[in-house]
Image (cartoon, rainbow, N blue to C red):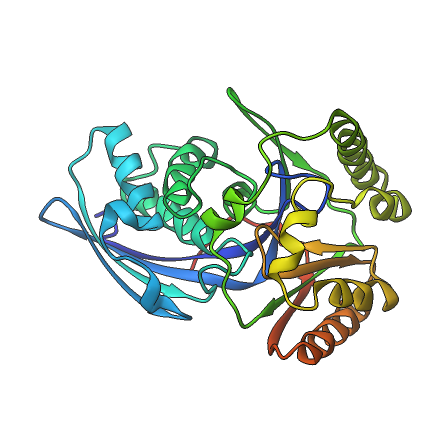
Length: 311
């Protein structure tokens, strides 16, 4: 008999990675969201939430990233199956490390399993994107794709959707530092300019190409030279108290590169050893403290696995 319930954990993610606005992201080991999904006899979706800053998250399915993702999946399959979902938020909303994407990724993977896996992860992506769009205000895959597939992901095109898995150098480590504040993703997107100067677009295209080649060649100097954000960071940096000092502290401690994760306020850095990643985290936490913000550091290799089925 098919399972009636499932527990799925999906990882946090770092999006944009400085040079790849809306088109590059990678997954990290911690934190993550854990969803318990149960089939129910009646159609419809019932949602409950606990965990980090969860009181701000809507439980109406159409307005919840996990709920909307499953509704999209059910609609595509023509299914009337009902679900009861409990979301345990390990990733606070408005963090910049893919809170909405992790819930959506775990939701579609779990629901798909309970429906006897009619779709593969590639086919689930569009439904996860529909869920994440509830929080972000637009369809973009640089959080949901790495949360769903693991590793470092390049979205080459959105129409048609073309997702590429990039190589993960063996000695590449991530530090993500989350200060105790919230930035609304929709508002952070609205503050970006609608047009970019041609010169900036050309330079950013070169950076993205350089970063991609750096991953293929395990050339960390090239990665570092390429990790420049000419699109979003100049506008969003002012939303994060002490950001420039935090970034400088990471670079001074040996980071390959450092920038704002997604819309922020999380700040990420890449480095070439776990020890260095941890020291960078300590330096960034200390620097945030100088600006009056407590923060949490997460250090790990790049997380290369899809969402984990815990039970």
